[in-house]
Amino acid sequence: MNSGKVYLVGAGPGDPKLITVRGLECIKAADVIIYDRLANPSLLEYAHAHAEFIYCGKLPKHHTLKQEQINDLLVAKAQEGKVVTRLKGGDPCVFGRVGEEAEVLARCDIPYEIVPGVSSGIAAPAYAGIPVTHRDFGSSFAMVTGHLQHEENNEEKWKALASGIDTIAFYMGVKNLPLICTELIRHGKKETTPVAIIEWGTTERQRTIVGTLQNIEKTASEANVSHPAIILVGEIVSFREKMQWFSEGGVGVSS
Image (cartoon, rainbow, N blue to C red):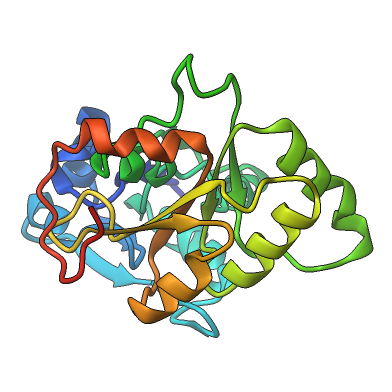
């Protein structure tokens, strides 16, 4: 049986123009495109006329396909001799489960290629006027999953984040915003530390809500913030006043 090949591609943070040249090549070459909710669907327009599209988007508590089913689908389509492009929002190596998929493909002797993408944890703040690094605002930056729990084995992690990291980007953290704020303050971050929440970063739907660790939960609730969103914590958020260049189209955008 002739095996096809799987491309594990980062679609970028939302704006379709931010996909890489290599990522676009993989879309154009694909017989099958298996795409996520956060991959801009307009990218599918670059596929050839006979390409098969399979949606496997995920929402909290609702997965169109479970991860194990996605893994099996990648293998099955490749074993049919097809070129498969697995299109993921952002960068596939940043909370994109690319390691799990690549491991399965390697186990089944299916050739694959990982194509990095622009991660939303960097791109969304940039479009909101916030560079995640700046020599006047600290020397460290961390990307952290927002699916954190208040457990004993997380105590050292919270301590390290609060006391050792200048700027933190939380992915998928809207639901856990109260926990994030509480734990960062409890482990040493000042209540006055600036926070920005960027919804639908880099797209025409982008909206930025700003506040502090002390009040961002209330502000976000009043603004009805929802996912997808990046939560950025750190003094660098205050730099936004100097670097706003992208025109946001949302209602109630903070300035």
